[in-house]
Length: 237
Figure 1 (cartoon, rainbow, N blue to C red):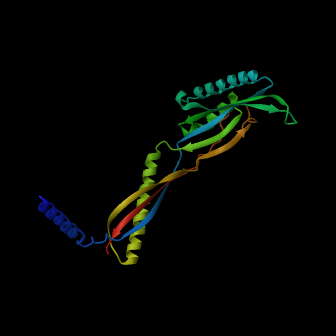
Figure 2: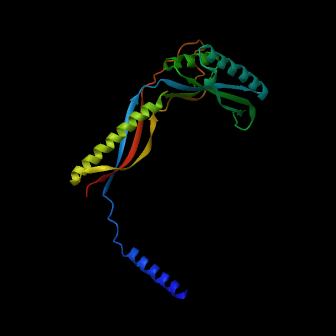
Figure 3: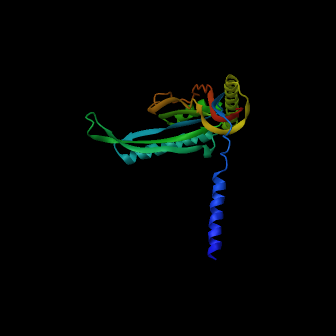
């Protein structure tokens, strides 16, 4: 029994020696790593309008009641011109004390209620602003433009980013006197849409507008959708 154990131990040592005696694996093929960028210019086809109503009164309850009436009127005006109810939501609501000239005495309270309105017809943005102001809106937080099919635009930018990376890799390989043999890895680095927003900001930004409903001139301009990738290529030794 003891001889059997000694023999097994010797064989284990021999096998370990055989493993360690194996030659090291050949090194992996050389690679080059490049970053690629792509950009697509698109015309916005939708927008988000952020506006609201600010009221002030010595009584906070009275300021709230006045605000509620005006906000309800603004929302009704949005529905009247065809905005879907699901595209209107409360964006913010706050109550602040109003101070006198000495900035220490509270003379009243200011209630501000803002709503976010998604406009799916870009040509209707001016009408939305005009109707809101006529209904009582006196606070503006700007207009954000966007595209409904952002995935398609991003895919185009992504394809351009890959082409850009491939061109860089080909140039590097040629300069090194090597050939590209394949792709080792691809990493999507993300992208962005710009510009994001335009317009007037702050309480009272639209307060001086003519209360007669007239469409507000709006220029959506264009947006740039970008994408970037990092690709590792294998090349000949």
